Image 1 (tube, rainbow, N blue to C red):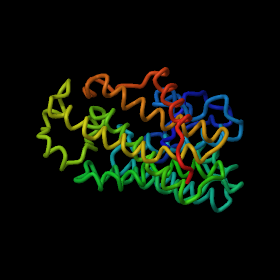
Image 2 (cartoon, one colour; image 1 turned 90 degrees about the horizontal axis):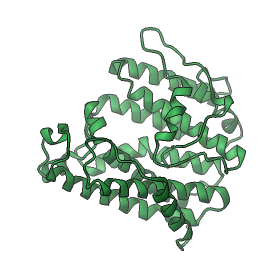
Image 3 (cartoon, helix red, strand yellow; image 1 turned 60 degrees about the vertical axis):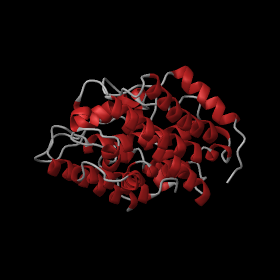
Image 4 (cartoon, rainbow, N blue to C red; image 1 turned 135 degrees about the horizontal axis):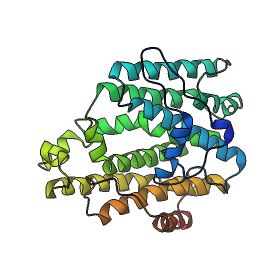
Length: 306
């Protein structure tokens, strides 16, 4: 589940930005967490038990921190790679039992010591952002899905690990949900990504629907771009639906939290359809009432548990 939230940070997550000689300052954690309210759905609402909420917020802060560095517009690609190396080194310190130097890594120290936070998903999130420095587009949908195994699926695996429910069956369902959520975000952010020189719409689909560079740079979506986005939105919806039985396999607060992730993705897709797939003026955002209705539908759905 892509880590997003609509809640304030706890004091123990706050801290100064770190710096690296010759590159811009790393993002301050307070600024990273301030973006939580802009996400599609909550990941750390106040009704969750304290430990679970802290774990989820720690996952969010780490994932967003890494992502912000990958998108750091004032740095060159080489500088961004150097900053990502700094995070990777801190992950090594963390799992070696040493104290990390960066606030987002420090917030992970307790769940790592307790065995609730595996190493590989944290590494994959860094690798996804390294890939963003080298690759600006993806030829096929399968290529894009592979990228999502680095950029999105690790978050769901971290969430399942922190609640102690990371069975192979649940992980497989979580991967589908997370890839679906990542795709929804890509379709919301076509204009923003294009402004950064990135196009996540598969190139083979762009050619198939006759979408041009001018279409991607326009103020409003052309009929061909709208048709392409409708097609890609259907793919994201299929993945969310395929992974939604994950909710029925969970219990308690974890069940409610994951239902919120799925609901947020579905509500965001609805927001895209409301604007008739014209995402270029700005990313369409789901409303809270729509997200709540989707969450209730997910929670009430009777699915076979994995």
